[in-house]
Image (cartoon, rainbow over the protein chains, first blue to last red):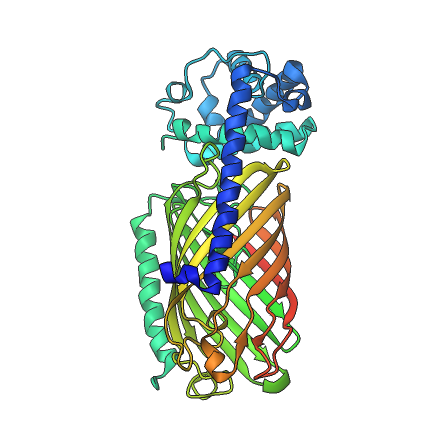
Length: 160
Length: 306
């Protein structure tokens, strides 16, 4: 390994490692920045791309409809209080985008405890969210911004 | 060295097939499924492993999640000025953790070696060690995988080894080991999803094994880097670049190997099928010794996922 670093091939190796480490530190910086903006609760540009709280509410209404029709996952919501679910999701998304809303429910781990949520179900839900966002012409960068925030929630939510 | 390669390979094939079946039975609680996101299985690359066009990635074949299994089958064609290569491949991904793959490559030569054939079998296994390329958006850690590829060249010892026309490799078979790191940065490239992959391959293959393994005076394993990057300009379209370092084991026989590069576009209309087209720059494949220079052309791949 040490010898390999000294060869011309080693130069490539170092160049590639530099690119990868650089890309990762950029990603890490971006993550830190997004957390900082969340803390200040300044609405991100994406909050406006979603049409502010009213737009988010409309998208969540449609999203819950898509989920209800999705046989892959609708059994998870059989006993759910739908108006309450819609309100919680709207506040959660609005807050995640830096909007003036606060999700007041229990944390993700507690909310999904005992539901046996699989990775496939978590992903299916995300795909349904994309369907709803596409229907309302949310720009791709704004969709990706939200999904980037939601993706790590798989860890507390997925238990099976 | 003189034993019948195909017989030897067949024996190993049964061993691997047995291992695959055992693994499937052992994980029978897993169901066939495609619960992962679109495009996250990559395509079946030019060694059978899930990844890009020419490099494996740390992703596991198919769309199976941690309690699903998936599978793929693929056809690849690379058409260059003096030869073309056709590949048939199949792979199984188990629990988004293990991958087993097989690829059969067959090449038809023209130019200086007109009418000759080359080829190889590649049996691959990959295990995801840690990390999740998609979920780990709050950490810079990549998804890491370790892979092994056993390759059996089919060109025949009169051509391949013993000072044959293909440069005189030392062995007609070889085993590569590689470490692969893949990171998907959601929204990471001007709002588009961005994949970065880097591999380190421990190998002594010549032109990935198509020209055998080792060479006159150069029969040691070495570390070679590979790099891929792709941007999803739409959720179903990826545009990317790949680099794969070649060795110089055959330099003692006067053969030159350029590093490989390609630019590709891949289209994933749904989770069942994908198509990729690339401009592949293989450069010198043997070089002036067999008059194979500027071997640059079109790469095509269709991968079906189950």
